[in-house]
Amino acid sequence: MGHTEADLAQVLHTGPFHLALRAALSVRGLPLQRVQHHLAHRGIKVGVTSLSYWQQGARRPQRPESLRAVRALEEVLELPGHSLTRLLGVGEGGGRAEVERPPARSYRSLMEVSTAVETLLAELECPLDGGLHTVGHHERVRIGPGRELLGRDSRHVVRAHRDGIDRYLAIHHGDRGCDPSRVRVSALENCRTGRVRRHHESGVVIAELLFDARLRAGDTYFFGYGIEDGTAGPSTEYVRGFTYAGGQYVLQVRFDEGALPVRCRRFAQATTGAPRGARTDLTLSGRHRTVHLVEQGVRPGILGIDWDWD
Image (cartoon, rainbow, N blue to C red; front, side, top):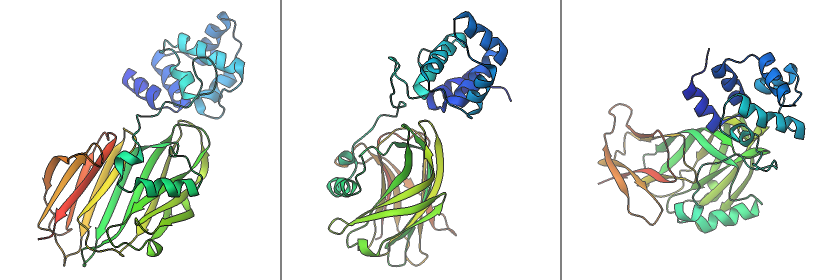
């Protein structure tokens, strides 16, 4: 299937490198032999086999002469300067650099319990930037017969913005009265549970979800996990903070048939101290007793659903 200019522009932004190179070759209609000829005219010798491996993702250009060839490919394929080298994590001066990541927000601006989160991250010797940003996230929250948060399941697609990423840190902040020692984290798909740390005063639990592969910058990964709680008092909202922009987020909240709220609303906040805006009433579906929100392009900040019981 052929690529369009729009496809090319998208994959040059998101990566990974081999798909961007493949799309560029397709859009420009240049066979590898012709590309090799153009490079030779610029004094750069690269075999057709190497070019083929690069576009298949079987090999990745790393040596200085290979990176010089990639910079020349940007000219041959009429691409913006550094658009391919950026996807390899190479800066304009030729040195290593991170793949461009979306704009970020700090935990402090997104969570009232940011101090507890940062304390647990320090215990795990993990940087505040985990090296991943969200491509897509579907989350299902369950509210029990006592109005308590029973648990939540997540299906998550992430992209690495630097090399060597092999884990995701799941953060759970329980409602008032939560007992972190009884909260359980389970790996559901394409990951396994690593270390778990708990902050009892704030009701925060952080769990490592270890991937089956070590990601390179630009790689995507799909995984699923679940958190079982049920230890706190009545829940009145579910909130998700986003440190990075981009990607789709879907949140569904399901209520027990014996404990239905009288009103549900979605909302957005720029930071945890800001007023809640973008309020929209949500209609509880009859038989399934659920409400949901869909955000196609997440911005840094907070999204959530809150509800009234009486």
